[in-house]
Image 1 (cartoon, one colour):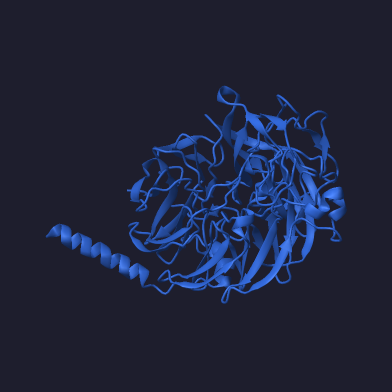
Image 2 (image 1 turned 120 degrees about the horizontal axis):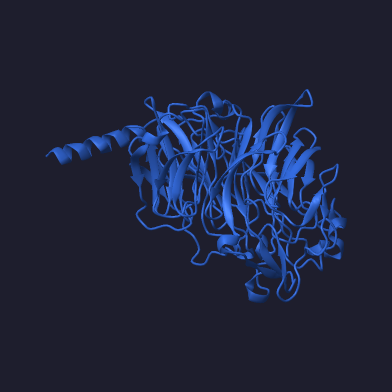
Length: 539
């Protein structure tokens, strides 16, 4: 009898949570820092700082964190990389490949779940068929699907409001990243560079799903930048927009990173800088017009795309207040740019790299000789194909002034192969990478959580990991940095010193970004691993 009463109480609690009028208007997201109890965007706020002002869990008590609840999908999942949205007592997660599920944040009880009808065969060349999260705006939750659709769901019930195709999955387009919801618009990019697709960024009307504009990230003949592709401009490919962007509401500018050119390792048919690949684009969200760009790796041929979410912050440099955008790039350099103009301010290596002597006054790399992919055994270059950082997000604390990034320290032998471009991945071996790599392993590779001075890139401290990890960082006002390891350890570090303060073994590798939220005066920390979504709190 008691068991039945407990189950009934839990179901009623879930029903109450699900019956709340979910409403997250644009202005509420603009002021996300004022409600740290929520997590309203992929990066915590439009600036992608992944910093929480919650401080109930702090240096003094973090060692007491315990599991509050665990949610496991009905079917086992793989490549669990979901970052949830939390609003008004409800958590919205994704389950691979493209399922959206709403949970009661108190208990982890499932409120509703929606799955798309996907093709029997999904083209996912060079990427995992997964989803890293959703966006929320008003009463609606938005997701990009593995077959390159954008879908709007009722936040209360999960009912489909509209479903529009973004691009043709048969050509190799696929969506793994979360949308970005701004004022009346939903922005979404795609992956698929290894299938020789042409990168794009779209904006859709949040209410109707009507496409408002499209920005192609690589030019074709006659368009600006086509001359940087040489004779291959007619087939220019790459520059995909597979991760999330950031937004400055005051400047009304969106900042979005682009992927590398294709073929990855054979550049014979694409001489020049290959704009606008491996770049950060500043875009007017009302028109889709590019305001400025900064290319980190001109004529890139190591698969070091620049799709990591950029972090926006304000700071004083040389005695003057500056609006900055900072980014730890996959090419192993840390960059500080002026976010009004895109002007280069400074850049330094934050991990081992052998391909550049440094950066010139404009931030262009000064190349080392003989660091390109070669035939046969290949050329040993640092960093490896996964770069000094991959898709996982960094964080920034305005309290410490530090930028926290999970860093990869490893190299690879880069091998040059065929460079034939054939859209849809129908070239040799089904891909158009133009070669491959032989990665270093074992003691030759490791990972580290590194704290960098945000305005200079100078390293303050590091916490070494056994191997490179695919886990983001989370900074909090409690003086903590949360992250995880490839071996399955979820841990907290002192934000000032890097001293380890807490560790929990999740039982499986971690491949996502942690978040934190608060409900009923209780702070929770959330992470995923294996087949489990886990919330932690204090006793």
